[in-house]
Amino acid sequence: MTKHKKVVCIWQFRFLWILALTISSQQLTPLNGQSVSRTTSEHESRAPAESPIQWTKHSIVEQSKTAINSAVAADFDADGKMDVIASYENGIYLHRGSDRRPIEIHRNVSGLSRTKPKAACIHSCLIDVDGDGDQDFIGSNQTIFWLECPDKPFSGKPWSYRTVDDEILGSHCVVAGDVNGDGKMDLIANSFRDKTATQFPESIVWLEIPVDPRNSTQWKRHVFANKDAPGGSHYMGLGDLNGDGRADITCGAKGDPFEGGNWFAWWEQPAIDGPWKKHILATHQLGATNIQPADLNGDKHLDIAATRGHGKGILWFEGPRFTQREIDTEIERPHTLVTADLDGDGDTDIATCGSLVNGTAAWFENTGKGSFQKFKIDTHQGSYDLRAIDMDGDGDLDLLNAGHGNKNLVWYENSGKQR
Image (cartoon, rainbow, N blue to C red; front, top):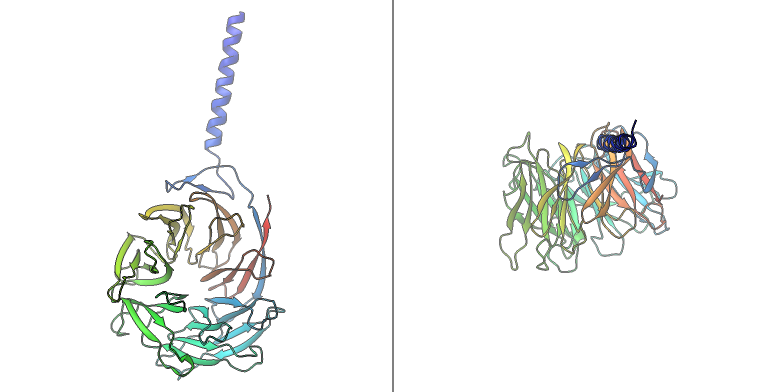
């Protein structure tokens, strides 16, 4: 073989070797990490990546007799340890932070309001309702109610029960926040049942704490989405979406078996008392549920994260124009949504968990300007409520999970950055 032919063969071999590597790399399927472009709904294939956070699962309730749909946490007795309240088995239980042992603080019984409660609350939150410096419990169980945290929360005596609103019905979500900008916490709740069940059908309201909440039977109700939230409205969020200094409210609604659902929207708060303006973010969003305002790309404009918890997928709307962008189109029934800085790098990450017993819990690392990389936290675990809370007092955010159909209550310890 001549010298010229040898050179040609060498270069041909190098070209074919590089081409084979290129084709092979394009066919790699990530086992754990998935990078998602902020400008496309396609998953970008890449080599498997190790999660920068190691999560350790801890059990609070291993197996209840009923579903556990919601859980909240605070240091109720000021001992420096995080306590947890959850509703299950026809009661509401306070779990002490030191040993997680439950104490019943309320029994779900008939006769306290217009409606008969179920075995467990569908949702809950915390507000210092009476202004005494501790957090009181807000629950939604056919009726919205609050339980006053006493001076000795672990005494074994029931916490005092009071009704917030028993005329709205179908309150799948209760959210605490300052709606009217007066420096006091308010409560946002939905009323998705139809006109045969409530005089506030397919609506969303915000409720103002009375001057004397201990002696009031009804909080002041403001119906801002009056028969304007059809379908099965699920969860709401609060944030100043248009930069006018006033808090706006977001909502997602599933469809079947409810007519008019499968949408994400937000309502713009007016400058003075008057109707709120509804803005549709997206329709044809099969199984739309969770939605939260957050700055996801660091441009100082609020964006909106959302999930299709009765369908598939996590997405976000890039503000200020709220352009729809997909994050993960395949994740099944992500019925929870956390937007928080989980890895402590200064930007907002996302976490979610599937609702069914075979669900996947995952977090999405914000890798910059609204791009996300997916990492699994757990499998075969359901959820109806996932919250970012520092459960162990080490300064980072852990995840508290109400397991819904798994009938358990767990939390995932954030062990910090691993790389």
